[in-house]
Length: 116
Image (tube, rainbow, N blue to C red; front, side, top):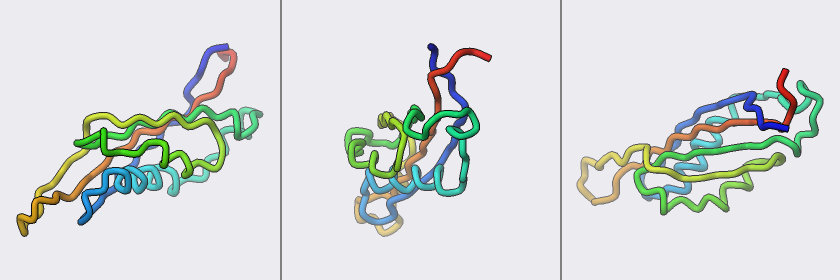
């Protein structure tokens, strides 16, 4: 049975002062999720646990994102999270050397199902 994507959401999050890439990513994930109440699993007659959740997080320093710690955001489903080069680091006007971090997220929900 092939994997079929049924939903894509986008989000943006920041770390204004601490240059915390994981926190910016967490906020971007929450932005993508918290604005919606989508019952995809029920719509297709699946259990929520069968949702395949693919997450791509764009930040300037992907190696500084703790992707494992972000999985606790999802109460169900099978999240796979990867950090890639993207997002923005915005220099602060006070010149303290710690930029504001902006993370972008693309989140897709898929199910293993027969083509329609």
